Image (cartoon, rainbow over all chains, first blue to last red; front, side):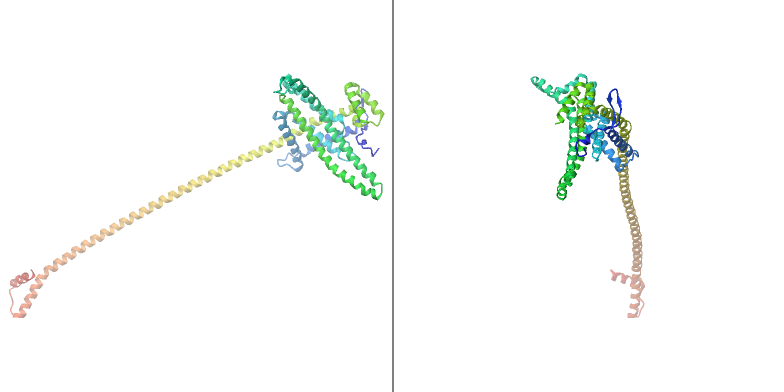
Length: 249
Length: 193
């Protein structure tokens, strides 16, 4: 089981809880959600507690992430979009810290489960749809009708727009999920090669060098992917929120 | 291999909505399924995600983001304030420099004026003195000329008498007789003409 690359995604119950026939157990996934939230929250809270006019290094990390997300949101959705800043920042930090925590050996990667990423993307799309209708009423549907399209093409364009809108939560969630899943499986497989080749004797140890180097390179790549996927998730969130704020094309 | 049925299962459970847990439990109990598609774990994951992410969101919104926003705002305010102050100080320095230059120019022109005045005063004084000296010289000169004229007149007056006396004496020596004074003087007068 230890060499099974899928094993790392196994969910095990730590505190079994069952309510109304549904299994709400506190699992290793829940534990790492708590760890993610605690790490991110504690980092942001503690590094800014001195409120230094001249920031310390860690305080400037918190400030940089704040300004990074703020600029991202302002560029994509304008100043009106800043009312969604807490949401986007929470999503970015949650995904980023969950991804990075997953890079520790034996740690569980919260974002490698489609239900988590899907829930997060549905949170985004739900916000977009509810805010869009609440703010613009039926004009929000203008999102699906680009201006300047010949009347004959309108039904086709609307169909395409609707499909693309509906596929957004899927693409948003699958992108993050698949990246984390595939990255961790690849890492595990190559690391497994190191062990199995290494156990074959002298020649095997020489041969194990290759997957070892590969594992090292992949680890670096996975850190990049961890950040990049959090960034992509946040950027797309900003762009979708922009649709809710300014539905006309 | 196992992905396809699991994914199909997921789609099915999505469609069924509420029933998915039961299906999932059955499926999970079967074992060997791909964990991310094991829908028996979904309720737990969703619940804990909602709890943790919800708390995280609230914590960030209520505590962390206002704090970081405040820090950044205070800093940018402070920077703007410092820049303002720097601009103000620069203005003051510029004003002081302008005032200094103005005063310097004033002082220069004043110095020039004083110099000019002094020069003119000195010139006037020298002129006055020169005039005075000239005047005194002139008076001395005329005085001297008057004296010379006086002496000359006196001398001229005496010349006749001396000539008469001398003539009288010479005649006496030559002829041994005393001549009449008036004859001598008329003779001298005649010869002087």
